[in-house]
Image (cartoon, rainbow, N blue to C red):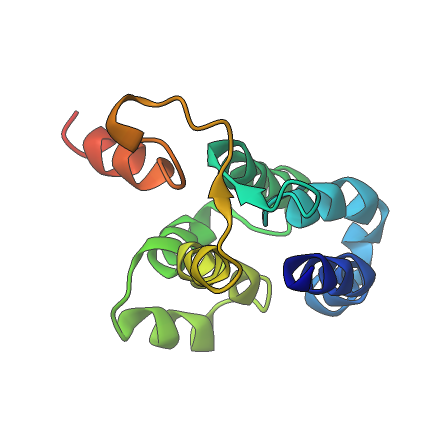
Length: 146
């Protein structure tokens, strides 16, 4: 029940958050962008989170790049803020657009949600639970080897 309350609050406040974060020229894209943002945090009915929700967050970021709210100059800052736990992320935010704040610490936030609300892995059929919650860091990390 607690996660449902948190999720309902996210749904109610997502529009305001996006209006605050996006310049007015991008407001027409908010309905689609909002969908991906809200879907990125799990399912309140099943109380689960999985790689599909994680993918929704990355689709949210892709939408922001596609509409021009984020530019190629933001790529490093977005990735650093999503994956890096160092203080560098805080310095990047000071000099980047406000929208980068939305991407900050996503993986840490959803991990906190998983632990706090005892969320189950969505469709857990992965080998050795490798893809239970978060798989994008493995893909991103291994892509650096190519």
